[in-house]
Length: 210
Image 1 (cartoon, rainbow, N blue to C red):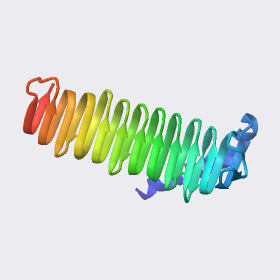
Image 2: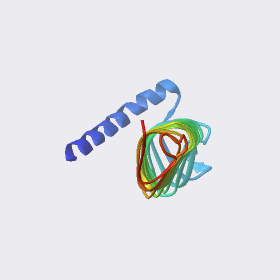
Image 3: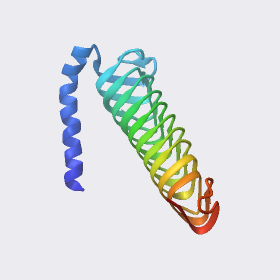
């Protein structure tokens, strides 16, 4: 674990070293300092590639950076990088590690969301870990929390008190209540519901369909 963390830090630092050159080439700014929008170094309609530091509330368009805030980090375009804040709010596609009380990706999300409430507006490839994990599209990966919701075709592992899938689920559901419209896998819990009724619609303790 220590070696992995060291490797991640090296990659982050290396990315920060390269960011200013990339920013100059792409017309992006290498650093953002924000108190609250519009009191910030770089205007909200410009992109950042490098480092963004926010006290209360910062806004930018496309961002590729290490993103740190005491309050809210908001990105109106796409985001790539590592975010640590009370609220990480990305309105379009996100390839990120998000750590906060609320983590939101409005488009497709690739990576990790770790917080109290994690929300993806479209498809997720990766992991959500929190009290409430919500994916409006498909989920390919893992959800771990009290309430796990995915509304599209999902492949992977759900571990929670309530696991709810409105589409098809392929993999393992482990919880107190497990619900899916169509199962190709295994449900383990107190109440297990499989909407395709193959072989059974409702089972206690274990339900399966392959």
